Length: 566
Image 1: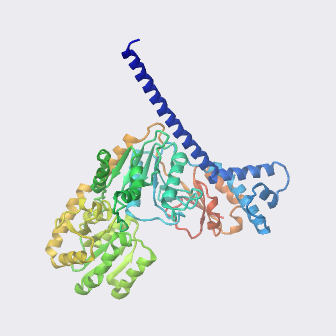
Image 2: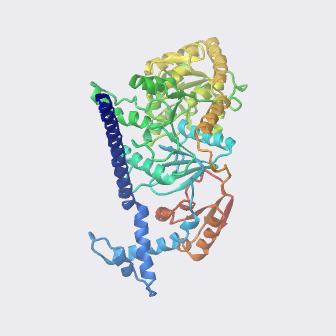
Image 3: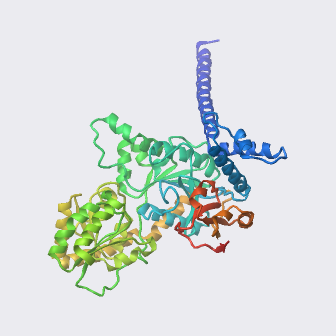
């Protein structure tokens, strides 16, 4: 055997050994992942429920009357002594669980064939309040895209318990993960939520979307479902950033960078994000697609104003510091004192501390300062009355929907040069770009108010530039993205979901056979059932998929198809 043939055999053995090592590493990773799955299962609420039901089943199979102590014995936790109160409380809980769990098989929801989206936030964590921001409106319009493609769209988010809510017909599912609290540990909670989203909630989806992209866990999905991440702009350029070395920068941004690497595609609403990622990895930066935000020009357009003398300045966004609220408030006193024909309007939702500051201006200036919120489908009314719109963002900004809506409505816009706003505003053509300082905002306002001809010039150009960001263009781009990335086998068609509200006046009857039998009848028909009572909050945790317990005073963001009074 010559030297060449020996070398070839050695090379072959070496390559085979490399392949075996590679396969061994793969198997070790698989084993690690499966062990993690088992760990998650055994610590999950679902597994605890299974154990509880098994204990209940054993007792009832004995064919005798069950007392709280019998049930307590089967569900006993060794680290806690029994008391009379414990026995009664746990007996009551098990009785509730037994009654409600009989309906669970009829209340299931499947993600098979759906386009699913994991969101950082849509409703409040207990499902009671809708957050009306730009990111939430973006998701409402993604639902419209899927509806026109005739495929079911569903939103998921981290939640205090397993709730299901609707905004009109847009379905939002709260995903509860045992042992997590997003208010205390965002990274841990959102990673645990994503794992449950991937492996349970949206396991058989046609496509998985993340909004924003960085809530993806640092784990590659084990299935073949494609995933798309959405960047609504750089959200990590906050006032807390003060890096003096590369290690500190990497430590702070590792979740953002690593999570982005797991996507088949990332959609960025601005060029700022695309360029930022290109500084990290040139090839990765070129994998991102720029799809700017949009405006419906048929809804947001100029209208003839009745009072041409009055000038209205509008701040149409969340009422808090990152969106430049205090820059706007700093200008109020000077502008209103100098220009008697000017009014300020703050339109959005905010926290009590921030609202207090606005109310101080209202107390001082009366009707010349107003503060209120509008539903997304009513926002055009605000711009129709407005002349100047303020978008004074300090950090965390993309191509602002509010900015585009103002432009399309013929408002002159004053915006900071933050994030994607430079993709929208051409300085002194369709608006004014400023540095994020109160003095700069005040100067820009005075310039516009002192030069009505230039103000009108900006307003005219604003509407024309907005045509380049039409909603139809955006929808067509997203339709192409969804079509090219979703699994087309057995798609779930888009459909209207019927919702039934059962109002139970007497709280003692909320779990009666008469109420639960009505609920079961509608669950069997595929409807979503909401049982409202004065005990709603105490029963929240027993909600499961299409069966939901709510309070009488909870705001519903949908109109029930049927209301039953019991």
